[in-house]
Length: 370
Ligand code: NAD
Ligand code: GLY
Image (cartoon, rainbow, N blue to C red):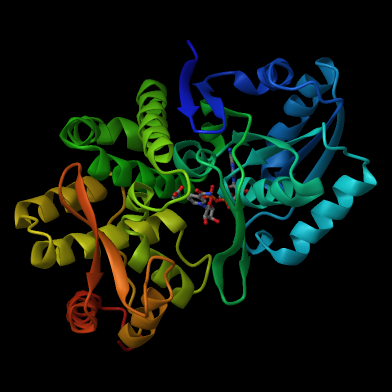
């Protein structure tokens, strides 16, 4: 199977995203191609480490790196200030210098945490991302956003840190649990909505293959998403405009994750619910047609991302939406897609949010009290 290559071109740097099969064993030579570092810190979470770290470790060592392997516990709770501190201390204890490199092997949690650590250690040390979840391949490993969470909210401390290289070995996706797979598919569906008719039609025609993890369909989806994101990030690296589109579905999605408690739903499941919500707001505020809402609903259903059966207090959700990073002056701003490929970031009045949250809550039966 040939390796797909997407180039991310930014004003101050450029790097390749390589997508293919069997790439884990090639990480050493590939990293050697972009750095003269002597030492490499290889960081992964425990789930990923037990499956894949040894292959990457061996590959790096064969390419002449002195490798220090480090692991963190799996899950969002590892995107945490004190764990970032422990990793920083570990890098110092291993003697990593400015010329050395950090390799993040894992999902978005590992990529965000390790990316943040690499951004601040010695005021910045080179980073390679080796994503092992679909979400990380199509979204988080590309574009340079890194972060840790605070008790006050997700991703509240972070830095932009572009990697030197991204190596996405799609073979690793075979061991991903089903709900993590569907979580990644939500970000693929988000990209299809933002990208336009061509990708959306492709997704609709390939939803079954994607759900079944058909290797050719998976590679194509990853390549399409990375190419789309590369274009967005090239146009707006620091999210002062067009990059905001990547938050489609995230305003309610992040609120659901926070209010329900992190870990109750995957990030993608919450984002898919947020996309359903946003599409209904878009009918009222952005001229979206109801047929577009139905079309998106059908795609999400086909990807195994059915509407969430959850009832949460709407006032608390509203507050969480107002603390979203796009909010200005306490007013909720949402990315609204009016038709495939056409989006805007719109300030939504309090009363409109309330009305839609009530309608949304009315479709749920769990009965936690809205
Ligand atoms: P994750 O990193 O927690 O991975 C999900 C689970 O899958 C974990 O338990 C992990 O151990 C396991 N896992 C990873 N790879 C595996 C594999 N190949 N086989 C078996 N198990 C595997 O979660 P995620 O969904 O990848 O990432 C979510 C995070 O990404 C969130 O913190 C979110 O904020 C962040 N994110 C960042 C960006 C960005 O631009 N930086 C974009 C989107 C999401
Ligand atoms: N995942 C959103 C971004 O990279 O901007």
